Image 1 (tube, rainbow, N blue to C red):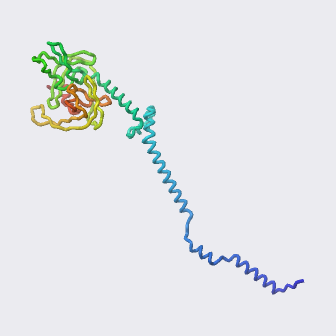
Image 2 (image 1 turned 30 degrees about the vertical axis):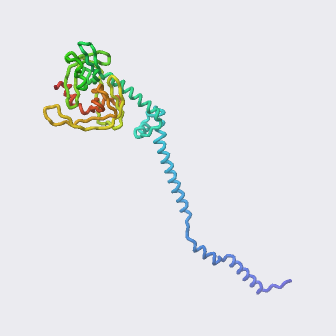
Image 3 (image 1 turned 90 degrees about the horizontal axis):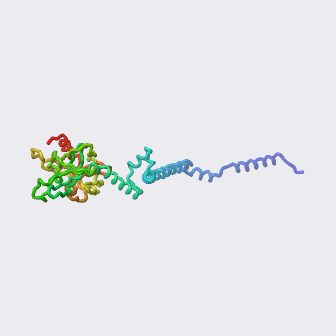
Length: 308
């Protein structure tokens, strides 16, 4: 049997304690490396990803909204007109200028022109010169019914007998309305500064289209000129000019004219100029000019009051 002394037990205990201390003791070199490393919180990376995701969603949503607002909705509103009954959808077309379906827009515009002509035509009269000697007739131009009791506005040239006969008193100017009836005319008033005249026929219950406000006309707007034929044209220029006053004073009068692209033949003098809504916005003058309705309102008002 092996002898165990108290001293040997104490030595073993010290050896065991030393081994345990070495096990739990941190390595000096490793500890120094950890203390030198910078502090990097894990939250920074998370915040960066969150911000990037939010920006990405906003960009995609904005682009998608523009595409829907500018392209998809206008196309649907043209394709399915019944959607226009919804107020919030109808507002889209009021601020949108991009049109996808050119063919449908063209058809719609042509239909508007047809409807406008149909609306105004009953109030357009033909001015015809008759010869008592030869019984021949000559188309002079067109005029516009201003009132249902027979007041008409036209060009001075349309009510002046031609010089084809040596005796002008043999030529009579008459008015032909849409139902085919003809009437003798009475001169009410003329305006030398505009070249327009007001005449009257003895009839009641005539179809009338009121003159509209011409202040909101725009360059490039389509207009329609009606006499015995029909021409469509485009507004190309606004003109301000001075004309000699027809009154006793020599003070010139500022005249407004609107120019269209093409020059018209003289038979269109005095013809109504209308827009695609069927509103009378002017009176055709010589060449490629017309007088906006707002320019002649005072003359019309004084003539209707028989202030000759």
